Image (cartoon, rainbow, N blue to C red; front, side):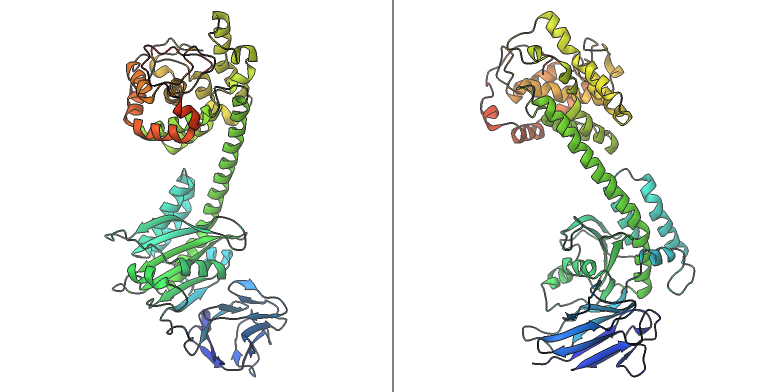
Length: 522
């Protein structure tokens, strides 16, 4: 059955105009065409939409600025069309509608009432002026300026996203908002929810955003404004919309000149005034303004992740030389990170532990295998040589300026609170805090791990090791850090079981041993 097609304008001067046919619609600047578009981005004979044996198709007529379907420029052939596709002739956007209901469902009450596909540069030009070239209201302008300041003062990507989203929800009076980012650069990336916010006085709900509308916005490359969202004959989008009480929704494309990043999703309730086209353009300007900062934050995070992977490879090079230290650095890093979080250290300090933890024993690279892998006790001379691994590790890292912040962890994680540790015999708070944190984690793992070269080969039960930490508060361990470690013992044991080999967990010696004798090999 032939289904008549309707094209409805959703941008600029053609917004609200409707063209309908059951055979052909030709678009361009010529007055003899069915769709006359007086826009400089449109060619005289731009494109045609024609019904064929297998449905409706659009074909570009060698236009200068191209014809796009859902943000993708079409080639010389025909491109099939379906309901709700966004078609652009140059910069003029229309939405495809079928005039009768499909056999499998009722007509949709979900309407695109406005769209904008402004470039990144156009979005940036809207920072100070709205689409009518009028200066923005003070609150709007302040929100846009504040958004640009977030990147300078945020210490993490998550903080940046939260700050940007909360500003958007506030200035646009949304009931809730979400930022959804693409996890890869491929043609069909997985979209991941990265930030949520609710308006003043709004309770958190189960449905935070519409996945279908978000995916549609990202795929089309067009920022869209929806209203009267009550049904969708294509998907089960009604559940998130109805249960989320979304009456008006904006899906705004986050993009830079290089790529699409994701979508800013904002909605209002049925009793609120719906978003306007001016709201869409304000949100689009905000998205353009913050997208460069988001892309930069993503790049920094990826560089950090790559650096951490490189650090892990270096740590594994140490562990390959020592049977005992298999997964030791991974466990110590996890325990130390958990302790730092318990102590509420800033994110930048926790990041240093994530780098310094895997490298805390890198100095063992410089210790002879005859000592490092010797079965049984070390002689006094061998013990002294083994102790030099802390200083050796610091010397290995010193030529790399970027490693300077983690050198105290590497050099001083064997210092003791009472000043009898090594290599510098620091006392109390003379030892840097991060080194004191790693010292607790390192000792706990040494006590609970199998040590093939020690006379007590079997690792001790966690309960015994926690007891030893408690006994050594104010002597071996920082009393504050050690006490905090004891308060997260359940989380530590769960991490221990997760990271230790099954055989080693099963072999934990269930006996109580009096006195823990530290060995500089671990």
